[in-house]
Image (cartoon, rainbow, N blue to C red):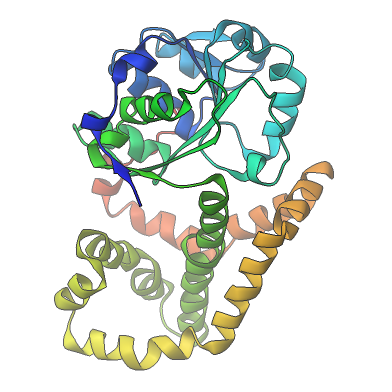
Length: 339
């Protein structure tokens, strides 16, 4: 697998382009600010009228344009809106307006891999996917570092798509940590699988199940939260730093022994079989089909599930306990008023 660094990238390629960032959320604000700080002078933010991001982008002194207008202006369009909105944005505002030979970029392969968007044949189609939320992409860049990123080229109409994609990735900080070459398919399917079975779906359900088990057994909610939620960060930070072996080196022998004898009882063969079924749903396109159908009915089930999650007692007790730890807020990556 090829990995690229700053020394492999020519920043002048992206510096010489007009770049429009579609969306100004977590990733959008990070890409726009990092590009500008890397010397890309012509950066605009493309948003629909009435978007909450307009004032935020204007506060950072970015040129804000409507999406169709930005498409006529830009040489590079980076799509950083939610997956479920991208096909309509391309079909209604980009397809007829993008310059001949322009570049269309994504931070996730879903819409291209599952053919929800079929770009014009004259467009370069590439991907730069930071392996971290946008707030981390920005914070790491500001401290002189970066997060690893994935890059892929779906179509090289110009003959220069690979180098331009690499230049963009380096400009937002990826070349400092490493930019790994992959494909839209590999990025999309592994990303969806990781989110659903481990990072979001698996981890959140595991924390809630542990919390509920202790509370139902009569233990204090505060104790359950500390043991099953709060300390997850402490463990993950150790794994992030040096792998599972470093985590096991740092915890007690009692904790390590419990990992070996009890972990496989929680994640057993039934869990692994379910993971394979989830992967099959992703590979076949079933998950994406279901998600797009959900959006056609105004996300009714999705919003109900979100509401149920927010109302879980674990959120109330967590908010209470975090007031005892002001350093968490002081070091917060997410400021909803600004990004």
